[in-house]
Length: 257
Image (cartoon, rainbow, N blue to C red; front, side, top):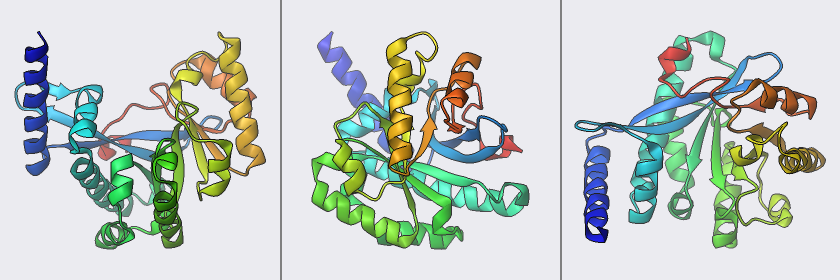
């Protein structure tokens, strides 16, 4: 059984490498919306893999494979380039969405190999202003190599790119990290949003994170909003921006209008 699982994982890794090389990976975009007005503020770029035999491979199946194998670096670079290119072209064709920004995830391994030159090159080729791009980093990236990470993040901010911490509350960063690094926004993990209005602990954690962010002049986005109750509770607690299936599923940009 172990041998079969290992072979399956290695096969998926080989096929993922080939899919990246052939640029078979697609990028879908999930809206980040204003909970009060319903207006889209931005979109998050998400990798999607349409397998020629098995159909769409769920991200929860191929992203861990990419992370373990190191393929997360070429995959992440591809998503960044494709997303910036598509987003810039889409905004040029749809002036009514000119206010929106693009958010792209950056893995720990990407961050250690990231260069400002790469980001600048991608932005220049697409003709997208740096302040239209947000990069989302995980909490663990802030503690693995804080000196190197801090240097890269400061250079990216000097370039004009904005920085957010993804899945806040599930990693290992301390409050000192929020002060030490040039992040401007935290995304509240869906595991806390899920229990809003039903679990007192979830309500307390979300309220605390929102208060902490406000006191540090950080923005917030709630992830995984799927119910009317969660929607209402977030508005009551002063959270303005969110994403989740209630607000919009990941889809190609053209599907946004």
